[in-house]
Image (cartoon, rainbow, N blue to C red; front, side):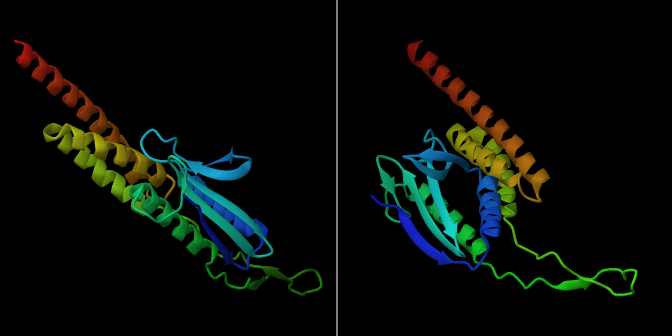
Length: 213
């Protein structure tokens, strides 16, 4: 029972680290909260899967990162127990680190229009920074959303599971440039989830009536 702990030398300003991290974590559905007196980012409440936590501290171009899931104690990113949420959290950590450690080109300069004395003044050009764009989640959402509707007609439990995946990935995917695709996946996921539950309940009721008749 331990957290994943790592230090990274990212050579970026605190403002840029804050922007990249908050953009990524917000798009992934994390929310800031206080956990045992620590300021952390948390995703999930434990109803379906173990809550995921990420803690970031940074300064002077360095980042201290901690990550763990909470299920009967704290668990890092390795080990068989809680393999699925650990795998999801590990993927998120790696993507966050990739964004934080990306190479930032030096700010170029462009020339402003000539002033009254005929001299052009250099002004800094915007520095391009890669931010999180979870289009893959949008793709997963539409696929699992459609499959959830189909599966619900034959295997209701599978439809329910696929519907939940379609909804959760759709929520994240809507933060990407593929918002329309993610929205469609989110909606079909809801339809598949509801349909799966209804058919599941109907099958149970019919089976019970046959047994008691």
